[in-house]
Amino acid sequence: MERILAINPGNTSTKVAVFDGEKPLFKKTIEHHGEELKGFGRVFDQKEYRLNLILKTLAEAGIAPESLSAAVGRGGLMKPLTSGTYGVNAQMVDDLEHRPAGEHASNLGAALALDIAKKTGVPAFIVDPVSVDEMEEVARISGLPELPRLSLVHALNHKAVARKVAAEKGRRYEELNMVVAHLGSGISVAAHRKGRMIDVSNGKDEGAFSPDRSGGLPASPLMKLCFSGKVTARELAARMMGSGGMYAYLGTRDVREAEKMAAEGNAQAGLVLDAMAYQVAKEIGALATVMAGEVDYVVLTGGIAHSRRITDDVAARVRHIAPVVVFPGEEEMESLMLGALRVLRGEEKAKIYN
Ligand SMILES: Nc1ncnc2c1ncn2[C@@H]1O[C@H](COP(=O)(O)OP(=O)(O)O)[C@@H](O)[C@H]1O
Ligand SMILES: CCCC(=O)OP(=O)(O)O
Image (cartoon, rainbow, N blue to C red; front, top):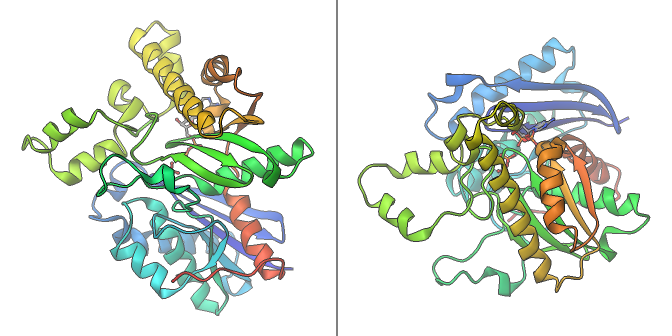
């Protein structure tokens, strides 16, 4: 039976899972607490550190790298790509190290998978990376030719959950129109028209703010701040994607904690949670119009979809568009495994990145 190692590097953790076929054998979230990652300049500088932790974790679990049939990592912010499973190659790793479309922990997924796979000569893959781009040409126009809109989206979870919802409804993903909102540490919303994400509210710098990301910001004040001399480019990038959003207002990235604050009478916490739900609903509405309102389902997924306060608030604003399906949590590790399995079993050919 195929044994697959899945690796999902996040800002504050590295998730590791091993599967025998589809069956989970081992799962661990390696937490990177507090200052642990602060000493590294760029995300890619963390590669050896995270690699050693993964190898140590596998050794402690008694899983020999020699027993693996493949390693699969979350794909990061590289060139725009079509959806699917890709073989990791040197060009991909080089692009992620030297020419990423943004700094993000997922940029390490391909390199970590390749380093482990190389040890025993098995293949390394990525599946539905953040830079999956199925946008229509009209959606790329921003208003300034030198600043086109980009598709940077939680594609792995968007696609997996959209397929699951379609299957639950007895339909195929490719025959439905859905607006899917991934509500996690980052928030992205996409219009899925008949199996393609034709427009997205990207999870990096557009749309709704999230637990620790600013989302879209008013352009003129942002421009003034950039030229004020009060902040460096690196500091502002880290604030917008890491200590912005709910964290900037409330000092917590945990929606459960914010809900507790609100329940205890903190009016600011209540307002910020209301604003997050309001902004998510607004993005869903915008993406529904892209499909001329012909939407079969609105789907809410990610960790925050566990929150009734948020999902009820969003649903109240968008249920006139289509029935709302709440699918809490995410399917990223399983989706990585399934993407690798499809290739190992010959059901799909691995795409080539070049
Ligand atoms: N039961 C819950 N109720 C409300 N919020 C939750 C719950 N579980 C997780 N969350 C929130 O979900 C967010 C993280 O989502 P998650 O999908 O795990 O993101 P990531 O994997 O990107 O870190 C956090 O803000 C966390 O507080
Ligand atoms: C859309 C960029 C990828 C991203 O933000 O992923 P996480 O929310 O998992 O950090």
